[in-house]
Amino acid sequence: MNRSSPPAPPPALSPPPGCPAPSPSLLSLDRLDTPDSPDPLDTELLPLSAATGASRPREVYRRLRERYGNVARVELEPGVPAWLVMGYRELLTITRQEQVFSRDARNWRDLDKGVVSPRSALLPMMARRADVIGTDGPEHRRLRQPLDDGVARIDQRRARRQVETLCAELIEEFSRRGRADLVSQYATIVPTLSIASLFGLDGTEGQELLRAHLALSGPADGSRDGDRHFEEILVDALRARRENPTDDLTTAFLNHPKLESESERLQSMVVMVSAGNETVTSWISGALRLMLTDPRFGARSHGGRLGVDDALDEALWRDPPMNNMPARYALRDTELGGRRIRRGDVLILGIAAANDDPAIRPDDTAGEPGNRAHLAFSAGPHVCPAQVPARLITRTAVNTVLHLLPDMRLTIPADQVAWRPSPWTRIPVSLPVEFSPAGARIPGPR
Image 1 (tube, rainbow, N blue to C red):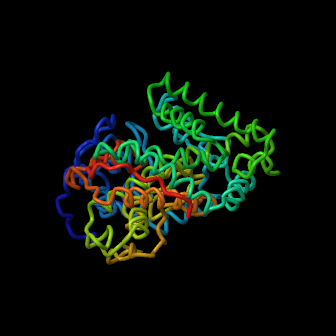
Image 2: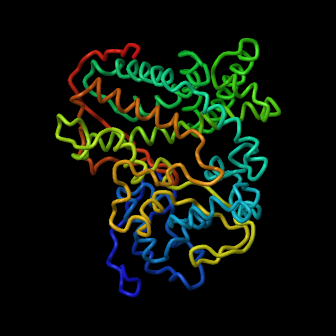
Image 3: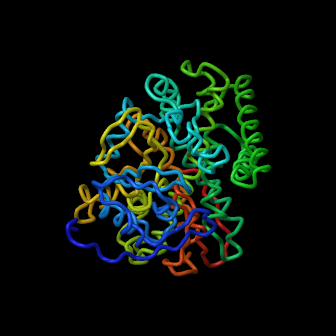
């Protein structure tokens, strides 16, 4: 669109269910500043959760880009502004330049000055962590090396068989009923149990870890108990491997020379389990939604011309698990995408918007089968270290349920799929399906 021409009237946004932040119509964007005017810091900034929870978030991001360019002001929660970085090249800039844009939240001015409440719902995702996520430079590289080395030693064939078996066991639990919710009964469960198996936890321990992890997102009291039990399970695993080393990630972290304390070993495990859980849930759900609703996908016998791997890649382009990823903090005054960034400003990685940047997708073809130049895994020193196991788990989960329930169909129209309220992730509330009741056959060794 020519920026000198008047923009077309935008569609209205509905507030995502349960979202505490206001959800104004995108018409409110017309009352904000133009790219070269003073930056507004008032309550008319678009709440980030309103974009992520919208039924068509790409339209929201495109509207923001038309008004403000590749870097736009948004609101994380009432009174807490941020920069949403929507340009592909700008996103690469902030992820690659650690000397200007830090991952350490101690550099967040609004947090330091008390603008962000100590009880803010932003802090579980954005507060400073003394781990691989919250560090930069040599310290980050030291803590990152064990993750890279651990992932590199995973036996992918054995891991695939383990994931395939646990997926079939989950499907067997609901297959005789002829209906299921593929989010709560499948996609939410598979990642934690799969990652637990990579750390050498048996089925019972994996289920305990899953229950503890689910409690983390519940009421405050249960969340604290869940967090404590979650870490207790991993501490017990470290103690067990100290006495009886095996070929798993727990032993790899225990013996890695770059991890200098029990706390660092534990936090490395926490990062891999926690970071991989919700993102893989999203990826499984997104790929299954495409397979069930888009006629281009699915088994060739059903007329689809594209398969599971194509659905996995398209989900990462169009609805990446982290639509928006926190965060980078400006270490000095600078300029980005024509905007004045001040020291201490917070910048959010608008991954979904950057994947849709017309500079790299002028005709919407960058998401063609086999194109993996998306930014779903971020970029730079903090790029996701677990891309290979994440794809293995997701691909196996999607393939297994499609194979064991071949006549599965979504019971609601595709445009009625609702999304969990979150400024960060893109996960359906549910994917209700029906299928011919049958006992799922657990696959044998291949």
